[in-house]
Length: 130
Image 1 (cartoon, rainbow, N blue to C red):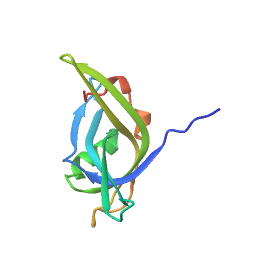
Image 2: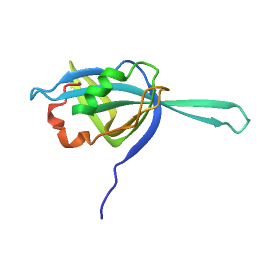
Image 3: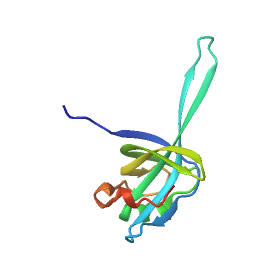
Image 4: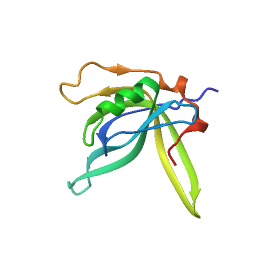
């Protein structure tokens, strides 16, 4: 049986995009993204629930994201989910990432859709964020 690991969502950048380079010289760009859901409770009260994901882009897409993504910008992302866990100085860390395959800048005046297959350039063992 085949499986599907695909995530799509619209959210806002939690901070400016941050670029790094792998030891092999590939650009990787990352930023946190807030994705909110709005709902009403049983008593009619409106609530907002926000999830945070780390968005990771590679190659040419990483260059564009590094130049154009600022805190608060609305962004559509599509990719696959990746969970990371590591230990640093005796403390456990965990985060959820979206390894971006497609990204659309939704900020007015930002131009046409940007699409890239960044995963083909990715060497996941070289990720410089941890």
